[in-house]
Amino acid sequence: MHRYFIINKPGNMLSQFIGTDMVGLHDLNYPFPAGTHAIGRLDKESEGLLLLTTNKKVTRLLFQSEKPHKRTYLVKVRYAVSQDSLTALRNGISITIKGGVNYTTTPCEVDIVPTPEGLFANPYEPQDYVPYTWLRITLTEGKYHQIRKMVHAVKHRCKRLIRISIEQLELAQLQPGEVKEINEQDFFALLDI
Image (cartoon, rainbow, N blue to C red):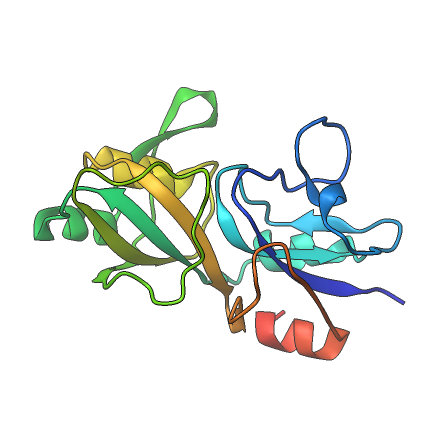
């Protein structure tokens, strides 16, 4: 019987269990069963919703299927974001992907949002001395470092990136480093797979 988990991945943690001396999933104080792996990894600096399971089919169902699945992020960028930049991000923007290939992102939802309430401090984020903007970005694709590259293409530096949901599965009030197990029926229903 497969098992399914969500975690609130803290910043400065790798989305893997083995193969590194750096802080990783093995450092969470939770008795994961053998064969547990991350689905749709977050890079070391990124935070938020990370899915874990013992079911190897989930990655294919969620990220390699014909049906797109929405992922929503809160993104803190340096400086004020203009309407022109928002439009460019929404309509698709050229970024460089693996192999040095130019790629135009698919249209996505991008909005400026107020500073999120109840957001946990990231001890690795330096103090702000310049203006910043919080964005809420929802997309259905995930090229390597895509959001960081997208905001960079419109002349902003990503200061913080937090995944808050995949489809209807939400991070909610899960604390950084906290693990929650979900039954298979709910997991598949919330992810629409």
